[in-house]
Image (cartoon, rainbow, N blue to C red):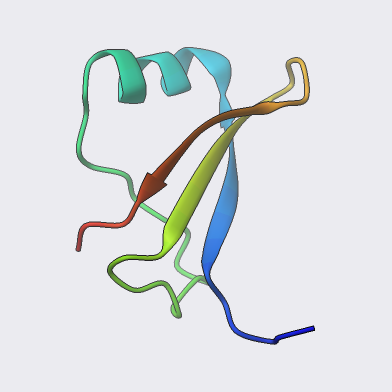
Length: 62
């Protein structure tokens, strides 16, 4: 198994996921502890406190 980081998954309340995706928001502030994310990596949002399933996957545009 590789130790390379190819992206990250973030828990986000479902109403905020809808705002990000449906309103085509292009700003997401990542936690300060994730310093190894780079342009082109994958980012996955999932609904916290809701049904557990992936909602959307995007590439980072930094």
